[in-house]
Image (cartoon, rainbow over all chains, first blue to last red):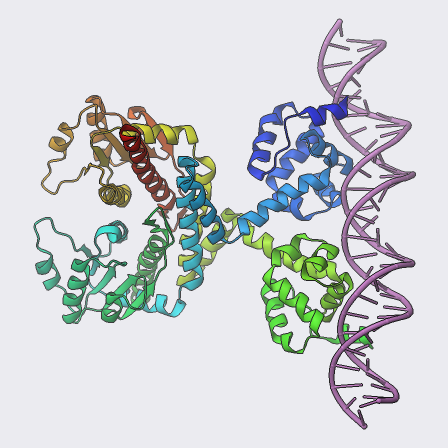
Length: 288
Length: 288
DNA sequence: GCCAATATGAAATATTAATTCCAATCTATA
DNA sequence: TATAGATTGGAATTAATATTTCATATTGGC
């Protein structure tokens, strides 16, 4: 009868999230030791993935047989099959984001519902973040920070898709009490605004293909006044690159025709906070 | 003497990167089959981590004994210890983001340079994304999409830290040709702008603690006119929640006092594109 | 407080997987 | 081309690991 119970039960969880949900669901009704190993499993999924039944049981403070009973109670036929789920989780997490993205795109296209769209954007953001994490050049980063830290006023320049990043930078600089000017004017006074910039100031310019003409034009103008420029853009052929003292190439994954801006955001936040940091250091050095 | 070779050799690689370097270094001098398994190992590290000696050997097209010889040639005493390195790699890659974040914070604080700040923001963004991916409620998501898809005009309402998200939503809605109004006015005409909204419209309101008073006030006002509201906020106690037909709780990790906005961005983009999608579907249905 | 059902511990057993060994086959060199 | 040395394949052996079993303990219902 016990055996029947296992086979009659709704089918076993095939992926980690389902498994997790199942465990949390039954948590209250599990016997003490089984509950103990259940808690351990959710807290230390990596241990389950790699350990042996004996080692896991020891870490969790139960007998190996309990571990097997736990697996069976969930509908698996033994510890080994339970372990597969924990291993699969690591594989998937680790599987190239590109593959995942492709899968999600396919899913979204065949009309798998709106959740797929959401998953797609999350995946695109994750991909972009891991890309930039690999690609960021430390030397360039330091150079940009140094350049911005000694500026009297930091001008922030971006339109359209990049504008949210600019507005965030302006917000963060403001919170850090760093003088800055977001170049946007409902009254059409951008040119005049730029006219005030001097070589003692600095610019953060952000633009991605297709480059907003206004951003290019304003960057050119401000560069001609001798104001040093830090650019965030998407290729070395970008028109921004030619004007910039330092530039960053950020490649953002796209989904549904909309590119992520997570990597750009992360870079922008890091730049901003690092500049604040560097200024504090410089301040301490002058005083102390 | 062969045994001596193993013990006399420079100590065995303990981490994956060292191992990888060692393999690439010796690649040229390895015998054919050993080279074959070496290439396989670098190409399919996950398989090495999870497979058995027999299964890996089969996939790589060699004998299990060759696999063991490969391990021994690298200084390991057998396949098992080689495998540990491949497993460790997965564990580390996968180690809880929270732990990584804590480590990065400590690093940044002890002045480990600006790269640590950047890494911190990337980690914060990744954490937030994986959190929201787990936490998003499909039903709420669908509800919000339905609500926004049938709106005549979508009003977008957010200030300060959340403003970049609002400006991105407005940009994306514009590109999708969905009528929208970003509630911001240099001329201080927000109240009047809101006054035009009707129950046939809808609102996306975004605010996080400390909630910008203007956002709350405007949301209240527009709610009183019977306009349905979708809120993105950070807790069920948020003042936005009480006005909203649907609300999303998004928890963003912070670093250096600045919270990520990646999760909010991803949600916002998904909402926007899904609304566009839904409208297209509805359009087709009416026509077809 | 007793009984039946359930849960647990510990050791025995069965299974699976790693390792070793040896014969066969290559490879380089004289 | 003959030969020593290295390399490889495949089966035999050994080690490890999962699972089962059974005796004992615990729990919940009456």
